[in-house]
Amino acid sequence: MIAVTNDFEKLANEILSSYKITEKPFMQISKICKGEDIKIRSANLSEGVDGLFANIDEQKFIFYNSNKPAQRSVFTKAHELGHYFLKHTLDKEILTCSNIGNNSKANVQEWQADQFAVYFLMPKELMYKHYIEVCNSQNRTIGRPLYVDRQQCNYIDWQMTCAHFKFELGVSKEALRYRLEDLGLLRWNLD
Ligand SMILES: [Zn+2]
Image 1: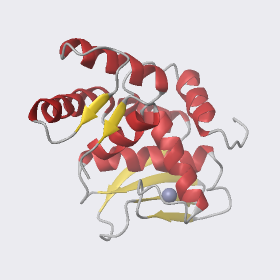
Image 2: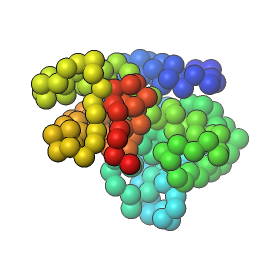
Image 3: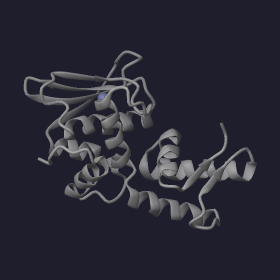
């Protein structure tokens, strides 16, 4: 078992490499759960709850809310894995998660699990790889950030970028925007 850390990117990369995942991490969540003996189940959870991690009779479960969109569930599963690898779940029977991905630091463990999910689903190497693919397909200069504003050509580039990353990394527009800005690959001028 990997030691507890505050370096969420390092932890996520260690998990990815120990499971030999080099593409589409979101498609490999069930493989990791199998390896860690965690069962994944969809459940009809209440509106405010995204997911939960449960430890019932020594069996670990991730439950995700079946009423939420698919990309939301991907992020939720990665978030719950974060709680597990960060050992937030050791002494709890049920850990309930709401407002996943809202990037608030109000609850430290929720924020930490979100950070893990970001780095797990969108590792730096894959972000650069797919960003370069997008630039090439749009005939844009690599190294200049994507500029998103109300100009139609820029907005269409952004929509195409989202579609590419949704296919490759299974992430929502919101999550993608956050990560690309973090990497200096996107300038947002729409709000
Ligand atoms: Zn949580």
